[in-house]
Length: 67
Image (cartoon, rainbow, N blue to C red):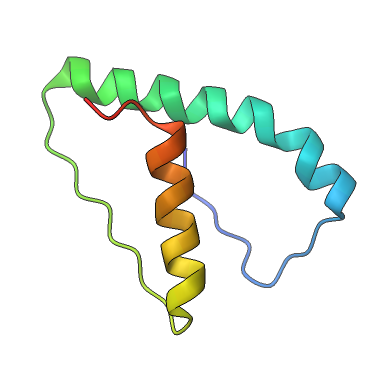
């Protein structure tokens, strides 16, 4: 799922908004697959901008099943 990361790539706001719903579905599906496999997972967020990291964390918390 996350084999390739294109650092520095930019997308338009329209393209971002268009790709968001399917990515949210993929995130939920990945979460259910991990839960079914009983593999422990730890997500590490790192960055210089604390506000940006906090925003990503809040989005993940909002999108994912808290259980």
